[in-house]
Image (cartoon, rainbow, N blue to C red; front, side):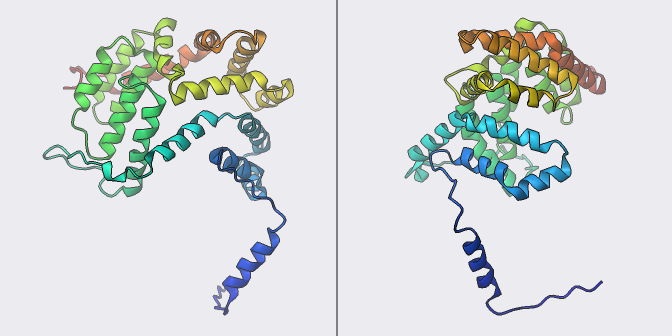
Length: 306
């Protein structure tokens, strides 16, 4: 086998002209009012993307169809609207930036991860718009981003505040215990035990409240997703169900029963009912199993956050 590299004068320009010529009849599908939706729809319809996914996953075509339907129904509209509003508000405000110093003696574990740090900076705005401040998901994401940015000054106080609040349930304790599993196994075991002691449906619904707050992006997204689900045809739902395993199909049936049986019921009523039904249908067992797994891997006598 021989590899040959040749340099041809003006070849790059010829290829560019060829591409421009071949794409002249293709309409520009980019929508500046819906940049994310239009971009993802373009990728869903792109033959190269479809072929690439088909080679990796035999049923990718069906999943792309479902994703396309969700996008066309405006699943991402609340997030897009928020991002566009943010862009319009941030023009001319770059001079208002400031820096938070790292604590003395702190060694930055992400000193070479420039891309990761940039993502962490962007994440600050995303989760600040997605969740009410001081809720458990807002606190977790906030502290993770601060750690990546080498600013973990108050993580003990912040996590302690969340753990001692009445607004966290089994899922929140599962997320926290997973965060601490490598850095502090005794703390992870303590948090897992706390989660196992509060596996009631009421505790789970308390966990979910930050994700349903309609004043923030996450709650708006969940509501839009539920509304889109209500409007999907029976054919679309049947196609989606064929891609799921039996347990997932069972959960989908619960969604269908609660969201579509009474279309007049408000989402404020339907979503907590749906989440409670999903908890009883097997989600509680999944969370319990994950908490037990972390507890058994990390269980050692310790005081939380010491």
